[in-house]
Amino acid sequence: MLIGEFSALAAAMFWSFSTIYFTRGVASHGVMQINIDRLFFSAILICLTLLIAGIVPALSLSQIIFLVLSAIAGIVLGDTFLFKAFDEIGPRVAQLIMSFAPPLAAVLAYFFLEESLGLMGVLGIAITTAGVFLVILEHDENSNKIKIKNKMGVFWAMLGMIGQAVGLILAKKALNQSEVNPLVASAVRIVSAFILLVPIGYITKRYKFGLKPYKANMKGLINPIMGSILGPYFGITLSMVAIAYAKVGIASTIMAITPILMLPISHFYFGEKLSWRPIVGAIIAVFGIGILFLK
Image (cartoon, rainbow, N blue to C red):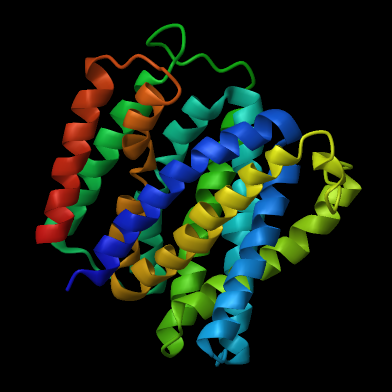
């Protein structure tokens, strides 16, 4: 049925559109404020969904621990290090390093989850990663060279990449123990990430709870609200479905094509000009994904 593969593709699509609102919000209110607020709104949405649908969380203590650890690795640490890398070396180079998260996840899954991909799976991951790599490499504003203004940024990006990969492995460990509703798994990860990030936001003085940050322009609330619906609510939930029904290496590779899906958004919404390199990269990535679907 390819439920996992299609869920991973849908997650990547939702994450792509969420970047519009996330970019707007970060520009006006900062990374920490928007990141925590989107988790807050998505936590409310997903808990209301569970309540309305009458879904009763049925998790063992071990599953809860693995999901919370997954949130710490993937959302709290992974995203925080990634945003730090954005500030140090820019989103383009940071995303370039993050494109190696799927191969790392596949290797970790082989050792810790005993998941083997086979020749076609490995080939599909390699081709897709190469395509994403080519697209992100093009995203240098001034030239085809990657200029790193702060080498620590590379270190933060690598930590973010590792956090993302480890987060998926830990979540898969929880899902492998017994059947878990993806909404429940997503709720545990989102709520725990929110609870853990709020103190960090207060300590660093980069987060204010409530509507105070938006009083000057209440329309600014649309950014974390829409970002929460498209990103954590749909995106993270679908990512849980993806890794539940597909191997981690394959699911993470498909979900990593967000930069490919961002191309039309970057062109038509942000007005960025596209050359042949990202277009060729997109074609290569699509070919790689086709292999993953047909393997």
